[in-house]
Structures are given as structure tokens and as C-alpha cells.
Length: 195
Image: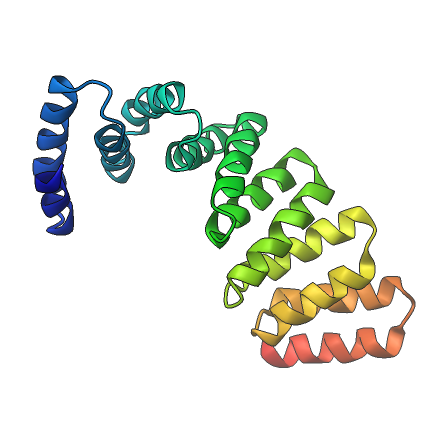
């Protein structure tokens, strides 16, 4: 396994893959090697080879957050958002300080139309990844779908402060919907000036 790590650090994926395959052949239940090999397959764009490896890891170690995360992403990407959300939720609970997992869970919940769950996940992601300007936009969308226009407006202001013109336009729309025409006009002028 140490040799495989050195190959990975040197970005020699082919050599690392060969070494990991040898490790797994001699010790089929070697979970770290199996996860590492699956990650190499994912990096090489061969997700179909990674999926059975990750499924095997989860069968052997149901609490393996890394395998749940990677498989959850692939399930969601493949259109199985419900299974993706389940696995990503499992990974997020095991790694509550990983903002990337929370963000991916929020995106998956949005795709499922679970706006309250999406809001919860994206709020956690925003706290952990404050410089990620995609999160406030997604959070605003989830809040609007939940009927929380105040929280949506706050999230849009965060995104707009980061220079996102689309968020400024959406702020104008929200203000217009609230019949706050003066603020809507102000946001529209700001968006025009930034465009």
C-alpha cells in the first residue's frame, strides 16, 4: 500500500493501479486498496470499473464514508438521485466538517425536489465553504421553492456580493415579486452596470 501511495503522489496512476490490483489479488478484503483503486478508475473516467469495487467496500464496511461518498456521487450522476442522496447523507453524517460532501448532498436533494433537506445541507456547506459562490445561488433556489423569500434574498445578496450578475437579476425579480419596485429597479440597474 505504501508503494501505491508513492505512485499516486508521483501522479503515476498506471503504476499505482497495477500495484493496487496486486494487493487486492493477494488480499481481496483490503478495503483501503480497494477504495484507492476505485478512485483511480474514477480519475481515469472508468466509473463502470469503480462501481463494483465501491459496492464491495460498502458491503464489507457499511460505515466507510469515502466509499459511500464516491458511490453516492456516481449514483446521482447516473440519475439515481434517491440512492445518491442516501449514500451522500451517510458520508456527510460521518464527515460533518466536509463542506464538499454537504454541497453535493444539497445539489442531489435539489434534484429530488426535497427543498427543505437541500436547504439544510446547503446551509452547512455555506458555513464550511464560505468562499464558494455557487452555494448561495443554490441555497436561494431551495429557499424560494420552500417559500422562504427572506432567506432566499439573504443568500442572493451573498452571491451578488461575490459579483454574480445572475444573482443580482434574481434579487430584482424577488423585489419585484414583493412589490418593492424601488429596490427591484436598484438591483436591475446594478445588474446592468455589471453586465
